Image (cartoon, rainbow, N blue to C red; front, top):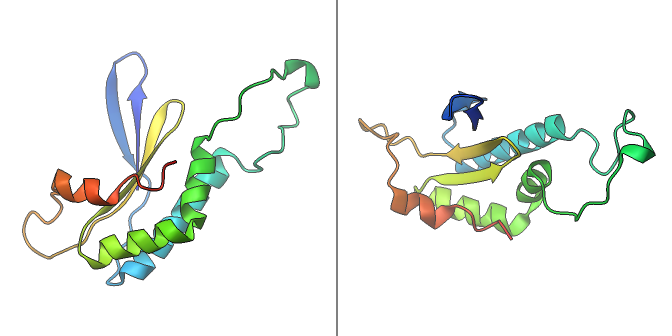
Length: 137
């Protein structure tokens, strides 16, 4: 799991590894990644739909509801069809990448097969495109 965001004032992007886990089972890897998606979503928006106690009625402005990062992470983690698609990708030995933008960074959750060969961490872009982004509506 990686969070990437701009470093203010520099114009550069920095990567932060938020967590890693290793398993032989694609199903367990996917279950762990779904749990991590929910963990991030809960940290970004602990009580979805409930306004913060410090925001008064006079501070609220009407906004057009759009999917936000925590919502998109929750949707991906709970979407049965997308989890089935992700398992298919992983069983075929292809990497899975879920990238969700936020206001000032992008959260990238990924599972990559460990082939044990030198350079196994290098991912071909053609493989990633086959398994990423289908869950976004």
